[in-house]
Image (cartoon, rainbow, N blue to C red; front, side, top):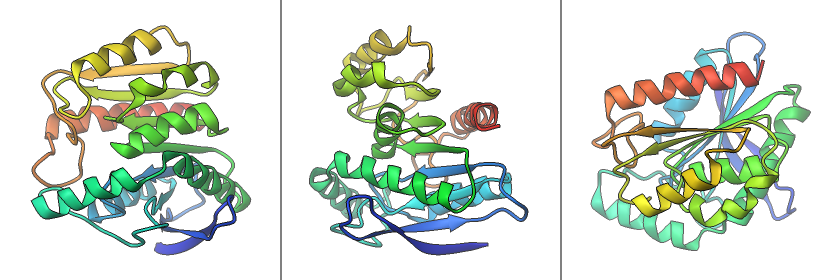
Length: 231
């Protein structure tokens, strides 16, 4: 079953629209699906639906709700890609972490105690920030942007975090990737996976960016990681 719910913001500045996909039986845990810069579009809803089919409560919050509520963009359409870049420039990631924390609390108040997340692009950055700033039980980030600029927060990470890093990411350049490895390789709660030759967006559910083999490998690792740490 799927529905759209309104989650009260911890900042008391409104409510966060979220797409919710529920499993057929009682959920074994919850997964917050944190969108890219393209909103809760068909690809993000499909990811949530897959988690629900696997027995999880899946919640995809609309991270742009403060200034572009309900927006759904296609990264393969140039005009929509540029629109998404504009929203990224407007976005306050600090607000985003409050939204993730609000979602965690809403899920737990609804009766599901174990909560993890899987985030993509900007959502991958928020997954890292959630691991450092919230009490989420486990986090996964795919091709997270600007993580190299937030490595001073790594010592706050107390729960498991996995990051997927495509080595040909044209938004996260080799210098940034090297900094992430230097800052996190030895962290006892962090697991890093490199994907040689793959680019940003390789695990998208649909569209031109998807690399089938890479997406299946990364998603399999994510599923095993979250199953282990949300048990």
